Amino acid sequence: MSKFGLWAIAGIAVSTLLYLVYTAFTFEAPAGTTTVVIAPPGLQPIVKEPPPSILPEILLEPEPEPPAIAASEPVVETLPVEVVEPESEPVVEEPDSPVVQLPNLSDSDSFVFEGLRAIRNGVAVIRLLASDQLVRKFVVLVDNISRGEYPQTGLPYRGVEQEMPVQNIDENLFVMDASAHGRFDQIIDIFVALDTDQAVTLYQSLSPLFQQAYTEIGFRNVNFDDTLRSAVNIILRTPYIEGPYQLVKPSVMYLYADASIENLQNVQKQLIRIGPENTEKIKAKLRDFVLRL
Image 1 (tube, rainbow, N blue to C red):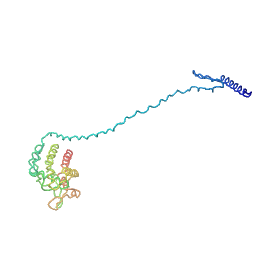
Image 2 (tube, rainbow, N blue to C red):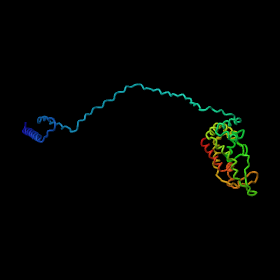
Image 3 (tube, rainbow, N blue to C red):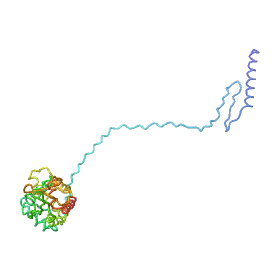
Image 4 (tube, rainbow, N blue to C red):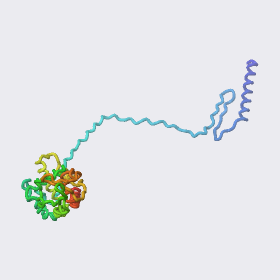
């Protein structure tokens, strides 16, 4: 071997020795028990293990493969069958009182009288009523009042036979006497004394007959109860007017000299004839009756 080769080998050996000395002085042993193996110089490369990691070691486990799904035939579910429950029959409650059998309209007078006799103070009312066709006459009266009219004939009650007392002011002007209202006091008091609850019950039991009579005079699609309420409202709207009332008599009938009274509806003028006190009694009774109807 040449000298140059020997010097090269010696230079490498010295350099390796110096490197090892330098490493020995500068090396800091890591914590733990890790051993560093140094290969012999010139033969093996120096393998240095990396220092231990500060972070905790994370072990990643492989995800298990999903279990194989066994192939099976599709299951076809049967749709539920709709069950129709049988309709239950309505429960019919037994009435507290026996069902009232109504008579024919033309033969209903005795039935109406019997119903009135069962009402407190009803017997006194019977003495004031007409003797026949009470249901039909009552329906006609109510229908006229609902339109503001007041019939002079065919009334369901007996008329007052006493003439209206008047005083002459001159040959063309009269004044109604204060005693004129007294002719109606007893009639109004008997009417007001009727038991309202019992009267409503009797009216409701006769309601089919009233409706039948109302159909007879041409009101097939109108409820008679509604017509009765309209008639009561006309009466309740009658103004309170105190006398004395001056009258004129251009023909057979007396007329009010005051145009504001004469221009009222006929039923309201009739109520003024019976006097303001009697009119207020009728209003209170009818208002109570309709509220309970």
